[in-house]
Length: 463
Image 1: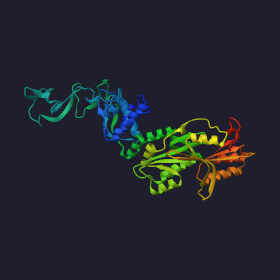
Image 2: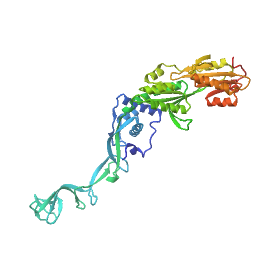
Image 3: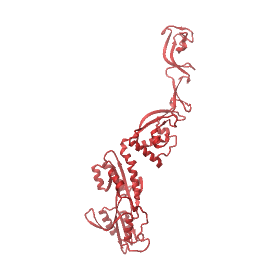
Image 4: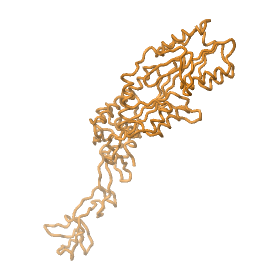
């Protein structure tokens, strides 16, 4: 049975949701429903419109036509944002699609529309049947056929009750044939040929309230926050994992600051109850398989105890509503770190200057304690707190007379891993052996060899 979407399928669907201006209007409509300004969007019959019905409140808020409003509401219902409820089922003309049609009655024998209703009498002697008016002659009943006066009910004649008689063929029937006349194009259609359209009223799906409240304001602000910090943002990003599986990341934020490329996997879990371990585990597996170690989850209303412990163990930064509000309103503000410039340096001091321009706090010969309890010395430790995540880069500088071997790269990687630092940069002069280079690539270590380190001339990287 056709619904409002079927009623519109013959027409070209306008792109009413893709444009930013219309998107803003859609968000305004949902916001008004969240605030209780609009409780239910109910259709009203209006034969002057193309569909034959309208949604006045939706049209006024969205600034669109009745057809566009119906399409938007149906789309929002398909997305699970609105709940649609049966309102009415209307008949429509198969020719022009108008719902402005009315039933007409016809003779079941010859199809004529010239049939009348009344009390039907039958003369028992000649079997003539007709309307009571046909028998009346000066206040007496006289058979129209044989002209015999009918005196006694049950003896001369009988009453068949109120029926219909065709004036064209004389057929008497209790159930006339029903046809439908379109008042727009005058088409006459049998019952079997008439189309149907189901129309709905729309209300907010309360199960999605928390999610909608997040989508309308905090999410928009959060995406802008990321962009202000220089990230390229992709929503519903498709990532192919090391396992070969394809994953969908709610938000992928990526930024190459010249030293390393930061990728943050951001998962969003907005529910009515606390989020369980299964959702956190699923997000962590997707991020790990996609090779992303910076992980953030926006959670509402909160995490269950087991899920909270797991998130902490896996270094997943969890932002609940109050945390997100602090980040958006009072966290570190974007500054010079969004400046784009070539990554070039000829000495340690130039490297440090570049890092500081990118917003990093730099420590030379930093002492860090590993998870094993061992103390490690890192040539340069660069740290930048962006509110949602704190980036730490371990930078090792190795200068020798011949290419660096696997043992030194392994030692550097081991120190960074034990210190819990996932972003690793190794500056090797004059370079790496092939075996060391392969190991560095596998471990995600970004390597700058002599040719890359001194693009504009000679210099001492240790000075």
